[in-house]
Image (cartoon, rainbow, N blue to C red):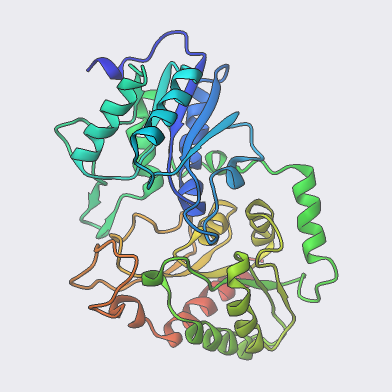
Length: 363
């Protein structure tokens, strides 16, 4: 198909990727592959503005790297003719030679709409867009019962740019700056638990993925009762401070709350020093996985198992298969979140204990 031809001389690349913190982290290997394929080209990203104060935009993850040279933000909910024309005008002014389409799996109708829009912007070379006659879905592994991860799915879609594997740690490098490392040092300075701590990210911006404040407090109390000398660092956004305080009230050892106090990239450096992270399916979970810190993750069944599971070894994933799995709901009313509420605190405590024990023996 004509839009799949990559020009020989590419000077400007436009990458289309929507989402928040976790969506950006799992796309990091693809951004690195794009940079490898077009090292001399200017690379900009077309992305959404955050939908709420609880969301983090793409810039907050990639801003410290050399993977992207600029951003074009738009509001996907604004579909007036004037708003669409403004986005089209911005793309035409940039005049990219290639579009790299890093979009989550969606309907064929959406793919057709996107194709028509980008071709109306003058883009005749598109990498990563599914065939119009295919659904572009994640692959399923019957041996494991898991679906292809989002990171692997995106890399497969843009394989025309070169070979790459999600198992390559170099593709997950966040390219931290010396200043960010100093900020991470400052964030933990004077913390009595800095020599050994567990991190928790108990917040969630999506109601259907929220395990509940009471469960997180009970988990904190049970883990600290078994390891009273262990420190706790809570991470997340400003909206997570109240829940972090509730968790800290159950913790017996030293605690430091960094919710909203440091940038996502600096929080990743803090997570790199943690013995583990306990979290929902969330942005902090993916940040921890990117820097190699094992995760105990509480998952709802709103997405198919495997797609958003964290990368790496040594993780403990708590997930329930239910008949209504894969619903994609942000708010669960009818089933009352039975997939995630079926996960008991005792299970989570045991999973944390397994990770902490493995880390102790490895040390």
